[in-house]
Structure formats: structure tokens, C-alpha cells
Length: 508
Image (cartoon, rainbow, N blue to C red; front, side):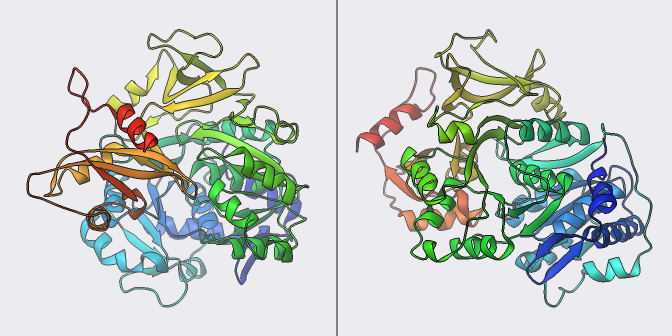
């Protein structure tokens, strides 16, 4: 199935109902489809052809909805980019994907000259923000008003639906290729497990729409029928106000956000009774927080999802599990269409309770990494995708995450690869050697922690290190704390023993 089906379905069944809400803007399904068909026509006039890439670098808005559907309508491939990236990271992804047209909002208006200079393949930059458009950009609404609508491309389910960039262990992000069929397969498995997105519901989109989890929530509500409320940035006050005003039935939040809502001093003054479910993930969640949510929001189901860009939603601890206090701390069971196992280094399944690598296979998987055949080949073994995550299955088939074998840190819902931060720190004039690890943090889930060995006669501070890193990569990747030691613990083959560093810091 081609993903534009959901918009056609909405027009047929709920054409006059409000579909998208973004602050003072609201469009019905019919209005949305008309705008999408015109924007698709505009993309064609700008030189976008079949399978060409269209990117968006913007905070959550109804413009994402229009850009995604218009790209598919025109036969193209949307590639939303991480809004927390630096200009260097964004230009890399645009050049890597060969993006023809990029949409930007006011938060990235200052980046327009850089994009013009450093991304020579761009045919156009389109401004989707509020206020005056930057020089050298086209205006989103003017494009739509001046274009003729075109017919839906109605291409194959095997065509690319998204290129989503995920962090790379070697310093560059990798473009994950997801087809229309694989996205929908993953979405159906997600829904069948008890995601609790329902027909006629109202989904609040707080999670950034460059994340696979947010995209699954967005498209689920679109497909089933209901309302989509776009929230550009999270604050507990704005989230509670939005839930109350629009009678939101579901949303996805990282644990830090949930905690900030439940502990807000004005929590009791908001009517959150419409909220039927909260999906969460991204980092470990203490039982005390889950109990607080179930106490403060007794009508709300909690749904814990484990997944990744390459594979979508792999497991789910659903609402009944939470209510029964069953297997809290696990990430639930494999979703119905997903085949999942835990294996040893030779690829053999391990007994229940034994830690190994989590692997998966099935129609929900990516078809590979864009322009990276070697990394694609390395990611699969005998048809099984190697997640790089360590965990174990218990006797009841519930998955427990033990460690991240790829040494990835999840901080505030964002993935940080230690190797990328280490590559930056290695260029610091005071640093002789370094290691970056994740350590538990009550606010961020994990925080990025740097362990440094300094060159003789040099000094530095956490403030100076953070500033150095933030000049080169996204600010959320910068260490929030650091330790300075005299010598790194090393293995016999010359690798830094990060487990010893973690143990030492934990003991302190």
C-alpha cells in the first residue's frame, strides 16, 4: 500500500472534519488533501521527480504533514532532519541524500545562507515558518496558492517512503531507507500490540517528527481518523494546556517529560481526563515514576515501546501489563508481526535469562542504509538485523534490556553515539585521550559524561569542554559532566575498558 491512502481515506469518510491543528491554523481533511495536491504540483515544477529527496528542517508543525504527503503525492521521498543538529550535520545529510528541495522554519532561517553555499544540489529552499521569509527562499503558502494540483503518483509499496537519519558510530549519520510497505507493516504491528491510538482520537504530537516513534503515532491517527495537534516545543504547561483545550486522547513522551508534568505545581488545575494513553520509551523509567503516573492519571494507559529507526517498534509493554504491575522494567513482548530473538556471538539463540544480542527479522525492517552498502551488509546476518543492543528474554517472552552493545547513550530522548563525541574531544588541544559514557541522571535518563586524560601542563573545565563540543556538533551531545584521570584502563588489545570507568564513577 502507498501511504497516501490514509489521506484519500480521510477525505472519503471525514472530509469536513478538522484533521490538523497548529496554533491558530486548522484544516479539514478535504482542505489538507487539496493543499497537498497543489504542493505536490509545486514540487514537480521545482524539478522534483520520482524518488527524488525532499527534506524538512523545522520544529513540529502541520507543515510536516503537508510536506510528507506532498512528497509521496509527487512520487518523491521525504527525509526529515534532526532539528538539534549543527549546520555541519544538516549539510552533510542534505548532500548525502541528494536533497532537491528543503523546507525550513523560523528556527533555522539563519542557516539559509549556509545551505545555499554548502549544498550545491539544492533546487530550492522553502520557508514554512511564521513571519517574514529569509532572502533567497520561496514561501510555502505562496507555492501552494500558485500551483496547479496534480494526481497522486500512487506508486508501489516497495518504493521508499522515508530516509531517516540516525547517528553513526564512525562520526557520520546514516540514512535509513524505509519503504511504504515496511513502514505500514511496522505500524500495524505497533497498533496490534495495544498502542491505543483509536479511531476518532486526538493525538498530540510532541515528539519530533524526524523520529520513527513520532511518525508511527502521527500516521496511526491519520489512518484511523481523528485529529492531529502539532506542538513545536515541549513544556509541561503547554502540554497540559493543549491536552485540556483539544481533549487530547493520546501522546508519546519521554520519561523526563512525564515526570515534569506529574510533578508540576499546577498539575491539579488542568483537566487531563481525556488522556487515554501515553506512549513512552527512550530510556529507563523508575517504578516510582510509573506508579506516580498511574496514581495521578488513573484513566491513562501507559505503553512502553522499544524500537529503533531501522526496525520500528519491536516490543511493547502494554496498558494491561502496567495496570497489573507485570514485568515493569522490561520492554514487553515482541509485537505480533515482529520476529525477535536473543543470540550469542555465533548467532545461536540463548536460553531464557541469558544475555545476548537482540536480533530481529521481518517485513518491518529497513531495506538498508542510503549510500552505505558495506554498513548495510554488516547490519544483517542470515536475514536477521543485528540491533547491537544486549538483553535477555525471560521465561514468559518479555524482553529485558541489559546494555547497548553499540555504546549508545540516550539522553533526554536523543541518541548520542560516544564515538562521535570522542572524535570531537580528541581534537581538543588539552586532551591526550578520552572516553565518553552514559551515566544515570534523574532528569535526562542518562547524561553524557566525558573521562579525560590531559596533556602535560594543560587544564580545562566542563564549561570549556562543553563550549568546544557545541561549536562542532549538536549541543545535546556535549558532555554535562566529566572526570579527569591520570591513565585510562586498557584491555590487552589496547581498547579502553569503559566498564571499569562506569564502575569507578558509580562507586564515587
